Image (cartoon, rainbow, N blue to C red):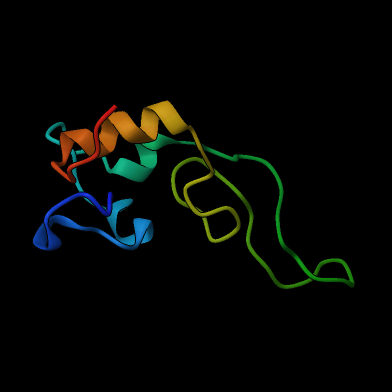
Length: 84
């Protein structure tokens, strides 16, 4: 995650890392983000086409809103080179 990391250890895109598995089997995204469980992106007129938000990853909100400290802690568990 850092330009100070060795070239082989640099990770340029966070998105790919959100799908990495933690030792307990959960994903970085599920642990490092606050889920958005209400809402949708349905188009007008009602009912339009779209998706509803829900627990876990959703087509509306992805993993949700990043929680900086939780995300850093999760990334440290998968060995990305992130440090506090």
